[in-house]
Image 1 (tube, rainbow, N blue to C red):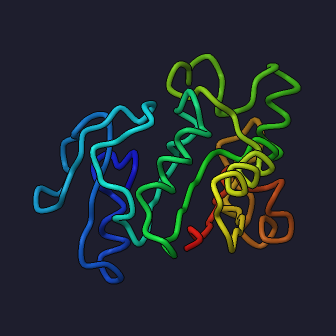
Image 2 (cartoon, rainbow, N blue to C red):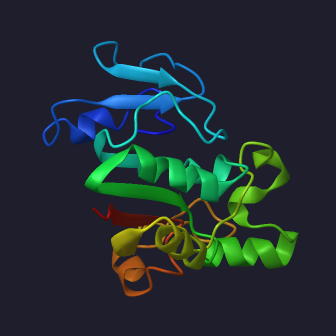
Length: 181
């Protein structure tokens, strides 16, 4: 779990995996003390974990914080075992909300001044697919959250509507790919 924060992903994965390892720039309160943790500057190419260790490498809402998403993606792939899965989520820059914000404020929704310097690099689905291709991932799929906020309101689109237009009505997207052998 790269950019693991307090380890909130572990409860969702514990039924499928026997071990959990978090990597982040800070050891946050609440990270499960019974699991492995590595302190790392995620903007650096090398992390304190050996290559080919993980069956699943997940970066939830982390890649947009990186100065160099290409180096970050290569590092994710490096720590996966051959045949292991890489999962990356990020804000959807082509959502209705983000496009409306870009037109009105000249910045994507998740990249307003209030989000800087935390959110540094806005990526499109096409960028993620290029990253996957350049790092040798196969079986690449992109899915949308089907959860999106209606512009200028605190409300979200009904799920049934978001399912009809997921690319426009989802605030986040997820790329999944498998490391080739």
